[in-house]
Image (tube, rainbow, N blue to C red; front, side):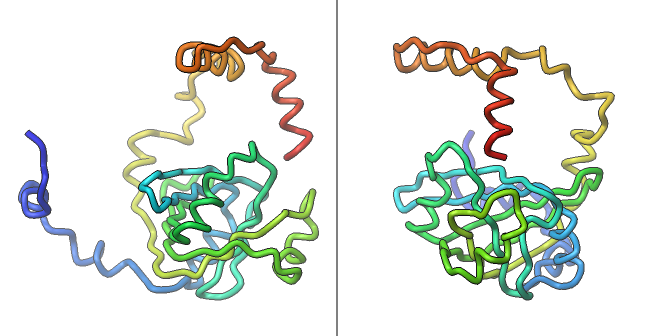
Length: 205
């Protein structure tokens, strides 16, 4: 059985609580701004005009995402793999959803809005003290924000180090890429040792 209508979907769930509905606000208040200031990690969700979707993790020092005012966020674009999936989606649709996380906090913060890619000197200057100046900045006009309850992180016990699997539970990144490219592309690539890969990453953090 597949759920194919909103009526059928709502039939199997209780109505959302009054608090769950009222917690969404149209701008960033002091609590949201403080949460972002403590956050070293955000997941950016975006979509293109053809329906292609992307969820991209971004990280930095706590507060690397700047709160300009109650309606505006700036996210520096750090060096990556140059696929530019998120940036291309912003050019195409401008719609973004953000999920901010703070280590040790089970609550998360969700922020939605419309974004543009800025190379304005004043925007870039705000990140002049970073290890390297960003090529551009994602400027988000906030449409809504709300705190997400702690249940998901409580269930996963994400921050409990005693439950973290050993990295050797899976092959290295290089080994997995080799296997996937061989299986799906029919090509053979050389495996980059994990230590060499991590050292290479450090050069562009």
